Length: 217
Image (cartoon, rainbow, N blue to C red; front, side, top):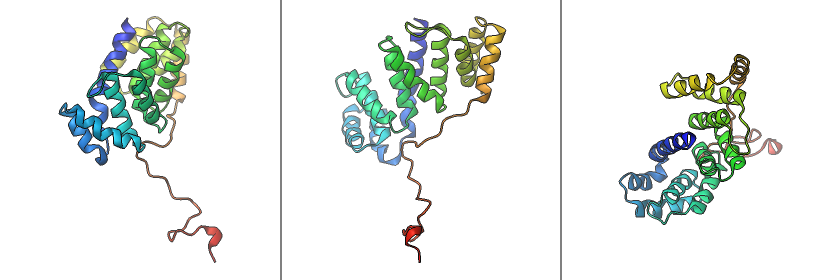
């Protein structure tokens, strides 16, 4: 139950704030969503989502998940979250992980998506992954070392909430488990990869006139 409440807290934060970073093409849909004009937000985001816009896919997935402007449909939410997550959207990856973990619908699938988000530096995902390992779930044994690692990463900016959660978890760990987890956290580096909206880099073999080196005189 405690983990459920903490996941719900993080979900609410993303539901309220994730859309604020959307690009200009989503300005109208985002404005409609924030003004609770969900019918317009659904109409405008659906077109963009179908064209592969990862931010629109995230927004549309949220509306299906919450039943905003459309009938609540978890399957549709998962469809759009997966489309966005496949493009590197860490919030979409977090949402997928939460959908599977909240009711323990599929713990392995939930941990897979939550870890992917955490590995790219999503702080909420790092925190929730740490909580999952600290408490253990059906089919996922408790792992204090992994818990220490991910909770330490989530708390590395000394945010009060995350720091309090880390301190609480450490009271259930041995000195050796804490040390090993901290060592993993110290060696951790965020994974890098394309982000939604990133422009493809020019081919290293291309010249400014567009001709590859193989065609140079």
